[in-house]
Image 1 (spheres, helix red, strand yellow):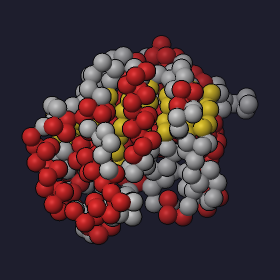
Image 2 (image 1 turned 30 degrees about the vertical axis):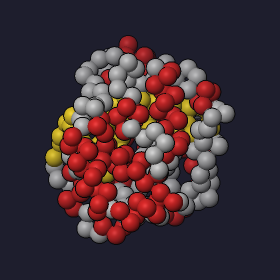
Image 3 (image 1 turned 60 degrees about the vertical axis):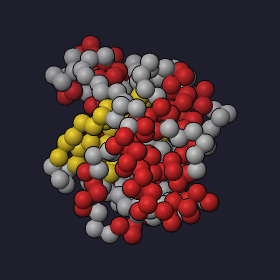
Image 4 (image 1 turned 30 degrees about the horizontal axis):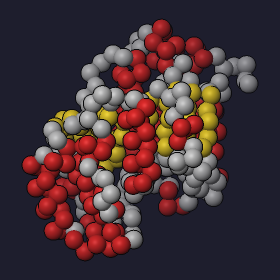
Length: 294
């Protein structure tokens, strides 16, 4: 290891917003992040710069040119290389003392216990359409009593939901169960951001294609998501500061200069949420049917 690196010096500029004792607490924490793409990669690097000392990261994908607009690990030199390995190297370049374990096949039933072994916090970086993996991961967090945060980049903003031990679970909030993928997509999108701040400036709705499992994205949303999730992480890991658990949510949009705190008691069962879902089903009927059948 390079003799020029020294942990206390490297993260000394955090002191003031955290105490020296708290910085040492962060050094001893382990965070799991599934997905190293659009938002997962910047989650990892942001938390590494906060001085968190250990990570479990998971992703089975490789970088492609279409990732360049938003994924911090996507460069010409990383094309066709495994995302998790690229991000591991980037994180170690920030803190060579990191204890970082890579799950290169992603998270599955065979390794999920190992993925969460000794973990203090889970941050969601999975692809929007990774329904089975997300359902499994959040259920494991609920059972293992691991706090979990999902920060979703939406347009030029981000929405955040926290699922805490002993509080409303992911399943209770979204009600996915055995529903088809189209319905899961709709409930996830509307549940993440009930205020819908981003919808007002989507200039080309045709780019949101549920049938092809793709949608528009920006680095603005990814970076805001990482910042908001990191703020929640500091509070959860240090045990200070107000954390709003689901059914409360947070949504900030940099394009519209708006911030809202949402509240949907009952989650998907809330009357406003049921109405929004009904309207969305009518508007997106054909696309949802194709996604159901995929």
